Image (cartoon, rainbow, N blue to C red; front, side):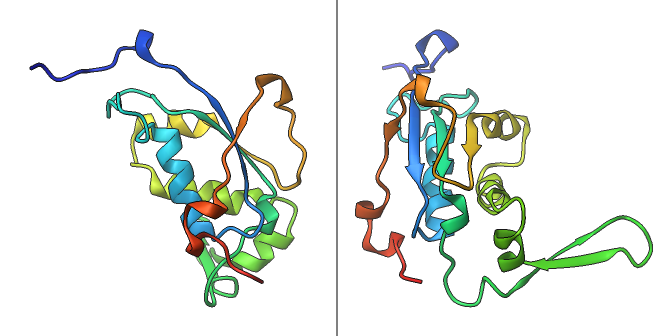
Length: 153
């Protein structure tokens, strides 16, 4: 029996819509990363983009457990004395709250060229509206998959 290796002709991409309201961030990011990578398909091939296109709405209403909302995120500008910090709560209340979900998903993918290509299949929106109605996305309800996926505020 030979091992099946998918070719670009074998790939079928779907559009998936996920509502992030009330979902725990890490659990949401792991589900999105699995769908982007294509690991949920029986014909998964690690070196090919087999995943689906994922649309995430209500990214500003994602939940965090513990004190992760108040913990600061640090980065350095590259200049002397250029260390900066911002809490996750400040990012979620700022002009681009969808970046929290984008960064969480990015960090759950492997750090290579393929993961940068996979990130182009992810669309995250802070509100409930999205411009992808023409693609007729299937709704993936993450809440009933596991009772730990949701958290009350």
